[in-house]
Length: 117
Image (tube, rainbow, N blue to C red; front, side):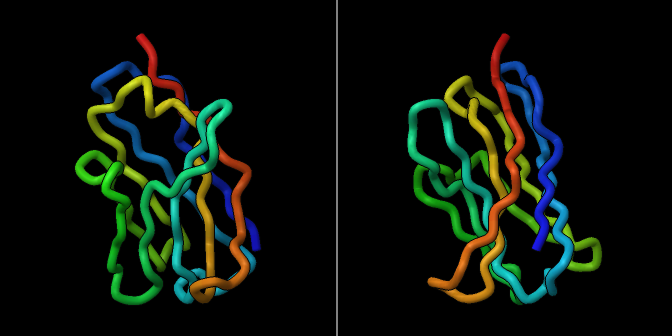
């Protein structure tokens, strides 16, 4: 299993960004995919999740409204669209793949997102 995030960088407050995560080495369409983030000296937290088949999505209450997760199984890619970005969104963003709830979770290497003027 290989997960490769891209699309991070420096963004001004109020701006938008789309992160991508390309998967390889596994049956991408069978896995639930998630985005997490980890800010300096903070625990990793869930940003959004999308299931493998119906495309049903989940966002923690704190992430609702500015984050949109989507997937393209034909391209083995999951996306995270972030809008109205804030300095508090500064973090390393990771994508994750999981075959079954409670099962082993695979991680990408992460992509740095910095929101600053």
